[in-house]
Image 1 (cartoon, rainbow, N blue to C red):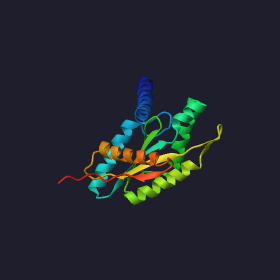
Image 2: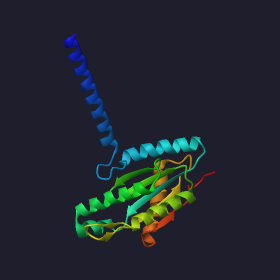
Image 3: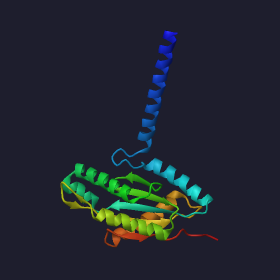
Image 4: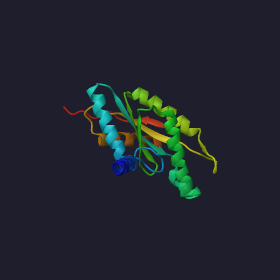
Length: 194
């Protein structure tokens, strides 16, 4: 029985190790390693699940595209280590402003997306403005660089594909950047065809 107990304990230990490794692998597969936010694939999966749920519950869901202003100039002037620090600080600042059930992801480079389940366009515009103001107060300690963000906001239609909504939010983001940066702009509603 002693040998059997050792074998059973050994298998139990191996199963616990495997479970821990599986959790770590799932985290690595869904998380952006630099910012700790959802990666692109995880953002789309979570946002699609939230869109489906909000449509079923007849609740709104809004979407933002966010872009750190003059990020290329920051990288060119201070180096990629400073750019990485800016991305981490931006992610931390955003987490401090957002609700627990909001879904934020890094899509690539300095481009981020944010889904706000249960939030209409007016509420999303207010949330975007709070986030913009929070980022505007951030100064990177080592370089004295003041960060700003431009944001495009749209309301996702219940039958709209996430990529289409993202394209509309991206167009609003482009308007914010064209309008002088460090701004929030709302996008056009989804076109309805008869």
